[in-house]
Image 1 (cartoon, rainbow, N blue to C red):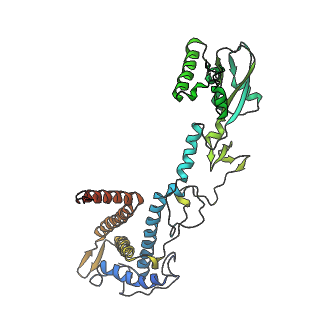
Image 2 (cartoon, rainbow, N blue to C red):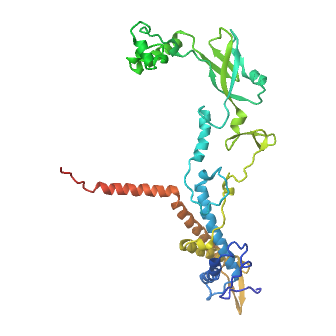
Amino acid sequence: MANVTIYTGSCTFISGSSTPFGFYDSDIEFQKAAPKVAHYCAMKLGWPMMDVELECDNFFAAFEEAVTTYGSEIYSAIASQQFGNLQGQAGSSAINNVLLKPSLENLIRTSDQYGMEALVGGTTTLYTGSLHLTASIQDYDLNTWATAQGITGPIEVRRVFYEAPPAILRYFDPYAGTGTGIQSLMDAFDFGSYSPGVNFLLMPASFDILKVQAIEFNDQIRRSAYSFEIVNNRLRVFPIPKSAGRLRFEYYKEAEKKYIYDGQNVNASAGGSAQIGGGSSMTTQNAITNLSNVPTVNPVYSEINSIGRQWIFKYTSTIAKETLAYVRGKYQTVPVPGSEVTLNQADLLADARAEKAATLLELRDQLQQASLTNQLQMQATQTQFINDALKGVPLTIFVG
């Protein structure tokens, strides 16, 4: 067996050379803790009763990895739980020491698109167009109209203003203008211009509504209904126009609906990249778009409390055990006078992997319990228990 370095029982931490990345080398607390953690891990591995085939730098590297993993798990949990609030924000400052409050901004940004479909808002321009109606012509080709207007790409017609005159214009009130004096009374209170009818001053509003409905039902049953249908961009209007005129409608450009970025319409270029507005390249500089660009930095070891440090010590020992298993795996047996000794590489590796997974799972469970959703659930449960307990408190009877 080749000469293998054995842990000697003491270590000296050298800032700038003892760890692979040097993330925490300038932290005084980390410098003080590193030799102690190395000694702790060596003792967990059987030293001084058994030789430990690791150097001090192996323990320091495991310690650095454990601190980094601890920070990574915490900040990834925060980023995942709060991503709905972070998405689209400027990624200028790290979330490590920022108190993130719930926000409705992302929900509002999403609901904008529902507003667009309901024609009550959104981030896509709703255009207005008009067709020339010709007497006795019932069918009109919207593709021909779009080409004449210089519109490229398909459009989506959302509303056609082809309706009968409002029923209120045909509202008849036999009491109007009869000299009863009601009309002048209405004008005095500035109600006269609301309707040709005046008796609604003496009747409930439902009276007018029933009359309007009666007029509209009469139009649908006894007269030709005003309606339309669109099939393959061909518009058919009912009834057939009796005279020339203009038909107004509203529409979206489908290319603008499909590609939307930060409230701006985006068109897909031929090469597959996205373009904004007049064709400038779409950039997401300093904007949080996914978990990979949520701003975070490594934790400060001196600011980690005893709960976190205990987890770090435990995780460091699992990394050291795994490293030792790989070292011993190179030498299955060690010759001794008159015999040979079989090393426990397989047991070490199996134990290290199991402990490593269990330690990570323990931390993730703690982070899940500390999440906003879990905290709200716990508070709701506590409130319910308190209310149940208060129900058993006798109420004082007031005697006046």
